[in-house]
Length: 176
Ligand code: S3P
Image (cartoon, rainbow, N blue to C red; front, top):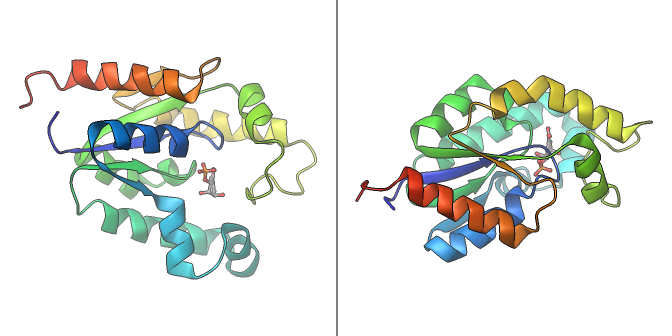
């Protein structure tokens, strides 16, 4: 496999961080989670950024972080679920390597994240499952543009990672 980046897309709960870490470990790449870099840069948690500065400011920092991250090769990059909505993010992440959509239904995503409280887009929302479906409806057209799509619905992290490694090997055959 060449030293281009692998970027993981998908909604909250898709497994971007867990699969990204496992993949990076296996292929010997650095792992980067853009949410972590945003927290570091802002000096506060994601719910605090949303609450104190608003979503617009969060998206501005997210775009800044992705621009910086894109300057380095040989990384597995887990993005926040909404990063795909910014055309500049999409163009950059598409240019620096292969993109992967970790697909799952709103029902399954909700089961995976219903006990977490670090997603401001779902906190305090009356029907979080419906909100996830709305976000999926808005975003999936862009997620589906990824080079690799893995249906994670009934799969464990290890199974998703194995499938992804197979797909990457297939796509990069002969890349040197
Ligand atoms: C968001 C997803 C979150 C985080 C922020 C906004 C979104 O990341 O970036 O809460 O817009 O879907 P994860 O997808 O890693 O949960």
